[in-house]
Length: 423
Ligand SMILES: Cc1cc2nc3c(=O)[nH]c(=O)nc-3n(C[C@H](O)[C@H](O)[C@H](O)COP(=O)(O)OP(=O)(O)OC[C@H]3O[C@@H](n4cnc5c(N)ncnc54)[C@H](O)[C@@H]3O)c2cc1C
Picture (cartoon, rainbow, N blue to C red):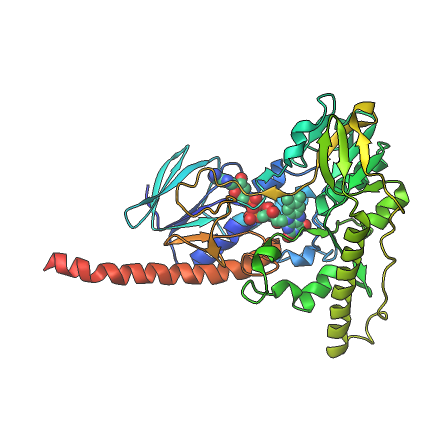
């Protein structure tokens, strides 16, 4: 089988790229190992809602048309939204088509799947940034009678044994799961490392509204001082709920969740935690206040002060004077450990030498270091919003333009050869 471009993955990023390729009349297929929106179907917990409001899921050629722009989609709603997008744009998706290898072939690529082999000139890797849950090496030292789960294996509190739960990691996933499990009656201890604190609502508006309006989410990858660092910043400590609840460390402490430092190691069944909790929290408070300061400045500059409530600051994160530095996991108080320690992509099928030592694709704003290969959906790929649904449109527009000019250059390079052959 032959096509000009193979897009791997029918999440929103692959579909946004498909829309842009179709607009440029570039022949392509979108190969998907499961069904459209597979990650949202099979890799998320039941109660998850998007942490971005409905209005903020703008995809090229498709926006929100419902009557609740400020609401947060449930998982079934998110799946339906992405499925509808694929249908509206008539994306040429081949579902149940697992890509097993991509390798250079001639002046393009050979893409092998469980449904046959494709030859193409260009490839777009839109296979997702969160295919594998990252679990620290110390996980191996957890005593065997404790159940350990990743967020991809966690669905709901009732699947857990009664008793204490240690949630490791306090970004969006860890704080939301800690909140839900603790409310189910299982006492939660939350191990907190570096995190990014933001309020759900500030001066009457959603924090995402402020960051979008003030251009924070549009900041480009070639404008930040340290892009490697920016690409590794933890996700915002944020959750979506009908009540627009702020889920942060203070809200968790109020319901009884116990905060503890970053998990540093496990020795003979004893978990050891860093003494940096207070500093980590102070740093997160400082950074949040810096963001709020920038928002206030922007609001004043843009004449919004009379339309919203005045600037204010939130209570600093409350931390126990001397939080414990260890938990004896052999004592039976902790029955489950949840590793909310991040996610990473899986490129085990990519037989092109473009991965760095850490297994990340080497690229410049999504233009991969291999001719005719592109990347989508990775944190801060081209903009701060790149890994959000709302970020795929601008990235797909930019990268499809690059892809089109690459194809154009290839065609003109081949023309003299063809003319020579025909003479
Ligand atoms: C827990 C969680 C919550 C999030 N919440 C939000 C949110 O509220 N708002 C927001 O905007 N973003 C959110 N995100 C971030 C982001 O939207 C998701 O990571 C999103 O799924 C990325 O979209 P994508 O299209 O790049 O990748 P995915 O949606 O992961 O799509 C990639 C597709 O590629 C397919 N695939 C992978 N490998 C292969 C292969 N070898 N062959 C064929 N197909 C393959 C997968 O099956 C999948 O369907 C969240 C992410 C996570 C993990």
